[in-house]
Structures are given as structure tokens and as C-alpha cells.
Image 1 (cartoon, rainbow, N blue to C red):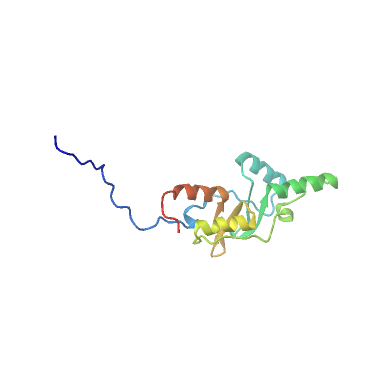
Image 2 (image 1 turned 135 degrees about the vertical axis):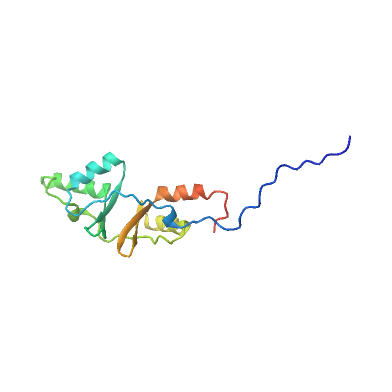
Length: 154
């Protein structure tokens, strides 16, 4: 009996090219958006039905003008009860956050992760040429990390 050398099947050399790790490749493009004229009650209903925690507010040109979240809705409920005011008479425009941080779709997802940590936000909208094109959430960043697991992260 001669000595046998065993070598397992060899994989092809992995490409040295890194997979895409840009925000635009992991962002959600199909968004649930709100309009400034909608009632807070409609927003609450949409948040519950779609199991989301908030969403962008856009005008008729699909330009980002704010964000409304569960917290904004809860604040409205609390204030309406305190002041004994009906909930129906309050529009999104009165309760949305207007000063909205956005993320560039070309940003590296790991830089985006750092921005999430620094800003303590759940989501960031992505705007191109003044129009809302998508949104990246903390969950999208986690999915990106899992997709890229095993690759060299740069």
C-alpha cells in the first residue's frame, strides 16, 4: 500500500472584489408614506396594520417634508386627552418631525451603522434629486451585515 495524499475539493479562488456594501443596495424602496393632510388617527391605523413604527411624510411631488412615528402619535394622544380635544382634528403636519436627517444612498452600510448609533434613530430616509427614493432601517443594516458575513469588511 502506497501513501495516499488527500486533498479535498478545491474551491475556486474567491473574487477579490468586495460585494456591494452601499446603503442603496439594502434600503427599502417600497415605502408606506404619509401626507401632511392625513389625520393622526389614520397614521396610527396604518402603523398598526403594517407593523411599522413610523414613516416618511411627503408632499404631492414625493419630496420629503417630515417623519411621523409611533412616539409622535402617542404624544398627540396624550395631549388630546390632557386638553380634552378630539383626535380627528389633528393632521400629520401638526405632529410630524420636520427636521429630518437623511442618509446618502452611496454611503457604506457600516458608516450608516455608526450614524444610527450616534443619532439613536430607527430609520433614515434616502433622498435623490429632492425626491424620496427609499429608507434604511436598523433591521436593514443587520440584514446587510448578515449578507456580508464571511466577506472582508472594509
